[in-house]
Length: 222
Image 1 (cartoon, one colour):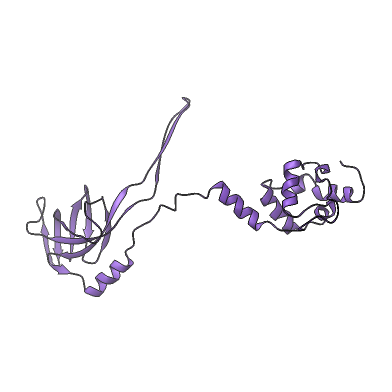
Image 2 (image 1 turned 135 degrees about the vertical axis):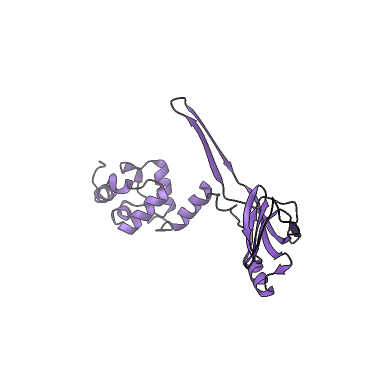
């Protein structure tokens, strides 16, 4: 047995034990609601079509949860007018469990299993992006750690072309204090440090390893 109902301006085909998402209804979670706009009822070979609704038809449901759908982005723009507007919308919904149609209910086990599996769609976290602070913290945690303290006097890493005071401070924070350490970096360490410094490819592009090797051997800065 199934029925076609109308609620919130939309039509739905439902059977006992089904769950569906409809426009928000004024009912609390766990409450029973009667869906009075029944357009058609099919019971085996018997088909009842309403005009517009079927007299005496009764579809009962239970409110499982209320929630909000995924964000829909709305963009308006006009060519060559420097006009652009962007907005977002998340539609409210009510999740229902169909308990009976004209007194015919789904088997108790089927209803309990369906109710247990019916969980509201929670998209509140899906639209959130990690904050820059959290991302930076994660990058720092993933960065390699070299020395806890310099071996003697630290080298002036600013002599390497492309390294300023800020980058020198970040390198020191990773435990890199000497030219010899930079000259001996592995590919894996370079990749990790690149990510930590937020300058992808800079170590190889500016040839930090070659410059550091030259400075470690007493050469002049390039």
